[in-house]
Image (cartoon, rainbow, N blue to C red):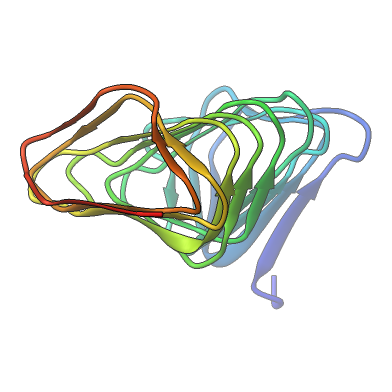
Length: 193
């Protein structure tokens, strides 16, 4: 492919991935009414997912996205994505279903809008979500080690069950609500509202 991009599209039905997809050095676009990965590994330089009024389930443990990942869907449809390494969010707009992200470090190069709840699980990595985000539901943040966590919401933000390592923890939003326990082994916590 000379354009440096690979697209897989179905306009009416769900897109189910049942084998490896390797787009090394290329961006990958997946489009369908729901995107599901049952087996296989996805390797891509960047990823754009357009799931319409469907769920997104790209949670195989060996997935590796080396560029920005943009996820888009609508309605009460859940989203789950796993990256074996660090994950960089591109601009993403999600419906009222839950968002679950698992990677070794989570950052962003574009804003995230989520109408439902969000859970960011960064393992022994940082969580840096400091764009003009809008998290309507509670946000849970989890990591370990001396890795900092920073999150920004351009509106109100509710922090859900959170367990952090020894890095710093900074939350910025119009109004900040701690909905549940925040467990951290570091005393450096900053809340700016």
